[in-house]
Image 1: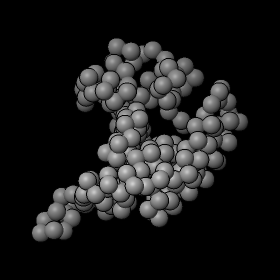
Image 2: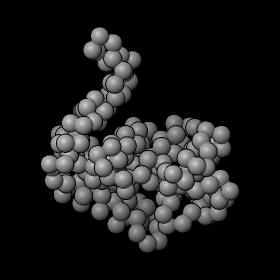
Image 3: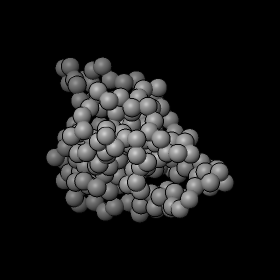
Length: 198
């Protein structure tokens, strides 16, 4: 998907659906991407999309609120994907904002893109996106029928941990990516850990 593996200068063994140009360009030449990001201004529309996404999730969530979120999430997802296609995200914060919206997109492709964007955000200097690396990865795994690895996703009325692979990574990696140790997996998540949405 990234196209970093090349043979005779041509990307080889790429996913049939390559990552967006902004992601491929960053991984092809990280120094140039960082230089461009340093001279760029954060995209106000991406920030608003993220702010609206997070505002929808404040307070208690009931069925009516969940229904509104699903409608709003779909609108925000569509617009965020358009902005990515247009090359609008330039800074680490832009990547972080886009990833935050897309991690609520509900499809493996959106989770995969959110994961790539969160890594891109960190590569461009937005280390506050670290929490999103683990959340987007776990959501991507679960959406593809695998167990989560980083212990970030909880569901149901009792906020119980969703299926968890305890062997794929260790607690040092989980904690480094803003998640929790396995010993804490059975405890309900605090506000810093997002709950999985249906």
